[in-house]
Length: 393
Image (cartoon, rainbow, N blue to C red):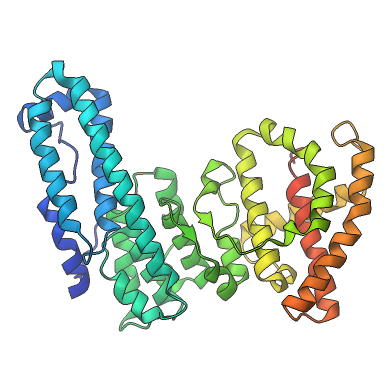
């Protein structure tokens, strides 16, 4: 995909200026410049370390507002390069050179983590004042801030002239300049198609993919505001360890922390825990979906009754139906002992009753809807766990 030819707006131009001041790319080993670069290019390990540090520097600057002390990052990088040129003089200095790079990388990682926490604070302000948050996000040049701007414009929270062109420019910059060189991630993002002309669910999935490269969590307001599309976008997508990111918000309490649900867990978990180990990396997809189901049942229970929208969500609903059916007629007592199974079955009605009561009192659902949502929450709870010990299709 070619780099964008659109012109930057004044704010974005301003926040890109500091990037020209320091070296952000690893040595060009086709044309190494100076003894230090030749030393680095002669060592496969050092080349990887140098590439990782260059990426981290880009991310640190991108996640730091121009209102913060970006000059200090630039000065530290210039000082590092001067020290590197002296310390990486020849092959005999490779251990010292590596140690120098590792120290600089650790320093940048700490700065990047701190910068992302500040950026997360800006994002947390979106529900209160979306326009002020957008203005603050314009002071960043990294992919995460731009992805949040895409969300704000696509959701209609912040209007801009010629929205489609603005969003396309932001998407293009993110894809071509701001993401790790991860072919799987880039392929999935490209498969989303033209984000400005797509439904909001696509923008939420785009945001999810960008956030998966950060330490930032998906805030709760995404789910309370957008409901089903947000839960689907941040659910199990990869079916492996990639599903661990981005992290999800932690509400003050979880539905499944109710003592009635803990009682059900007591009789299910002994059979589930060994399966987590046996499933290997695929377990992350199950764990992610259960985490999202928990969040959905806790934050917006009425959405449990909505039909799935995406192909992935429809497939998940089908798997959930098979798991619930298996639960009702369970007979593999070698995997899940009959005594524990019967105890879980007997404990489930109390959990459903407690959930329905909570939904009536806290969410003001009418009794019929509360009962339906409580049973749907129970299906999520059962299927999320039982899927781990059921045979694969």
